[in-house]
Structure formats: C-alpha cells, structure tokens
Length: 223
Image (cartoon, rainbow, N blue to C red; front, side):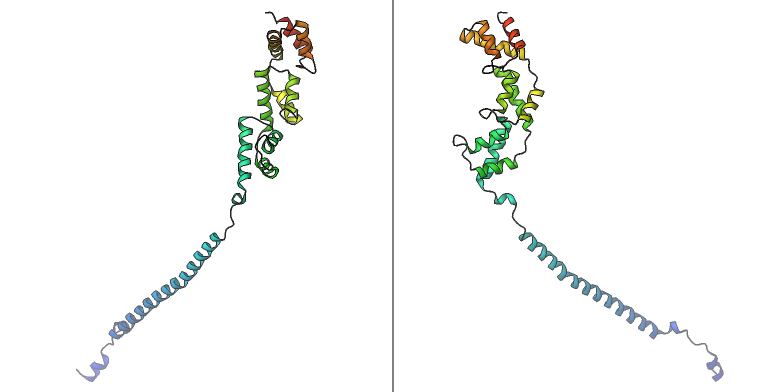
C-alpha cells in the first residue's frame, strides 16, 4: 500500500475504540459502588436515631403518672359502691344515702369517704323520688299530701322539695281508692266508726286526705 493510500485510510470513530469502552465501564462501576455506599451510610445514620426514639418512647411510658384511681383509699371506693347500691336498689335520696353511709347504725364510713362517694355518684334523684312515691301509694295507700311530706321529711326520705314536687306531679295514683283502702283498714283492724274514720282520714296528724276523698271512702266503705 502506498504512502498516499495509508494517509487516505479513514480513522475509526472515537466511540469504537476499545479503551473508551473500558473507561466507561470503570466509571459506571464506580458510580454504582458509590451509590450503595451512600445508601448504606444513610441507613446507618438513621438507625441510631430510630433506636434513640424507641428508647425515649419507653422512658416516657415508664414515667407516666399513676392513674388517679390508684391513689383513692379502699374505704372511699367501698363507700361509692355502697352509695350506688342504695341509689339503684332502694331508690334513696342523696341526703339519705350520705346519712346512711356515715351513720353509727348504718355503714360507719368516715364523712370524707361519704363525701367522695356522693361527689362521684351521678343519679336521677327526681326518678328516685317518683319511685318512692309510687311505693307509698301502692303499698301504704297514702294521700297526696302524706306522700309529699314523707318524701321531704328529715325522719323520712330526705328528698329536696323540688324532687318531691316532681314525684307528686308525675305520680299516677287514685287517691279516692287510697282513702277507701285506708278506711277499710281502720274499720277492720280498729273497729272505728264511720265518722271517726272520716276524721282520721282528713286529719293533719293523720292521713291528710282531702274532704272529698274521705267522703268517697265513707260512702263506699260498706260496699
């Protein structure tokens, strides 16, 4: 081949030279290797932080204050349970329950334990007054005024005047029939005269029925 032909022979493109590809492969490997290291470094950096957060969380759990109930004396808890039982099963008033809890003839709790119990006890005292009123009407055949007085009496149920009035306003009772039942009881057990029974039914120291209710009872007494 002549010198001229050698000079005219085309040169290989840059990207077809073998050493170019070798360099390219080395660069790619380096980049890939460096990326993994960076990822590992990032993971390693995060691990201590996660561990620290977990430790802090555990410490916070350990340092949580005890529940308030844990500090309540057992007597206070017992007083509350007793108060709930009196309210639910015996339909007692708030004042009546407190007195029963502290009474020497009752539960004998301290005033502090009883006060705690009543402060925690949530109940519908109007409903309790109504249930007591229904009981007095059905089992003892009492008059309207007699039931009211018994509900608010300090020697009786100790409901407030408002609670007693609610009970009377919502009580469904036939006071004529109550007066008649009382009249029959006086006649059968005490052999009283009709006029003596009438006076007893209407007396402020007796049954406290109205005159009309007493008259109804006497008229139907022998029937």
